[in-house]
Length: 65
Image (cartoon, rainbow, N blue to C red; front, side, top):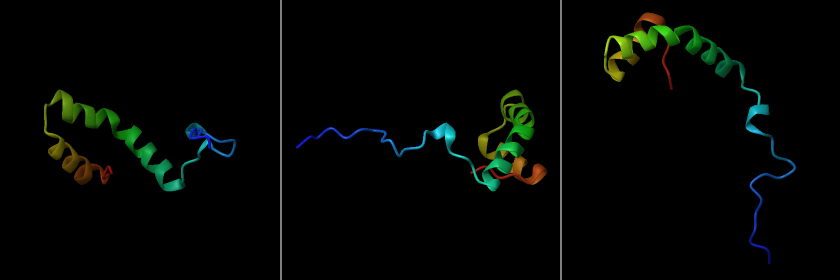
């Protein structure tokens, strides 16, 4: 009995070829549009992650998961 199990079979789909659903695509677009604001608030202004997440949700109606 062969204990070797391949990690990828001929039926596997490479991760880069899996299409995201419409909600995930919208979230990615929203995240990209807010990236600079989040960076500024979190890194430049030295706020906590919790405060950054709250600000992002309140000011931009975006909640990261």
